[in-house]
Each structure stands twice: as structure tokens, then as C-alpha cells.
View 1 (cartoon, helix red, strand yellow):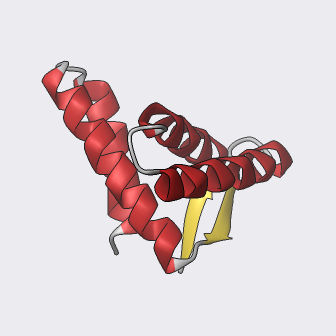
View 2: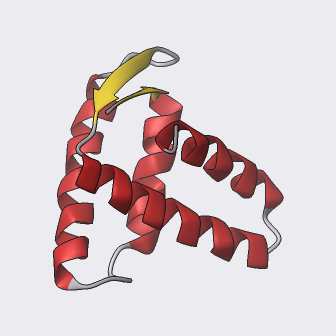
Length: 96
């Protein structure tokens, strides 16, 4: 699945993955690590404000959605609604 993201969204996604890191079993944490590193390389190569279609494997989509949902739930409990809005936008892109 290809997801079109700009550099800001990629960086928010990286942050979300890192926020949830070590909350899971070793296999999932390994997937998060490799995905975050791949996204860091992509983010560094992107031009500011430009969007890029990024290919994701189904297992990566599953991990991303799981991390984003749990991160969003923590932000809701902390009443950080601005962060919740940004996370929701990312979730929408990955659940289409």
C-alpha cells in the first residue's frame, strides 16, 4: 500500500513509533525499529513541504496503526487535543 505523506507527517509518524517503542514484544519492537530507521532515511531525503508516496507492507501498516491508536489514546487521556488531531489525520491515511 502506498501512502502519500509530507515531510512533517513522516516526522510525526517517526515520533509516534518511537513513543510506543518497547511497549510490545521483541518481534514488534524490531519491526518498529526497522520501520523508524527506514522512515528517518526517507524524511532526510524529502524536500520540505513536498509529499511523497511511500510504500508500506501490510505488516508495517498493522504496526503503524497499532502504535498510532495507542499513542492517540495516551494523548486523549492527557487532554492534548492538538496532538490527537494530528494523530487522527495519520490514522485516516493508513486505514483507507
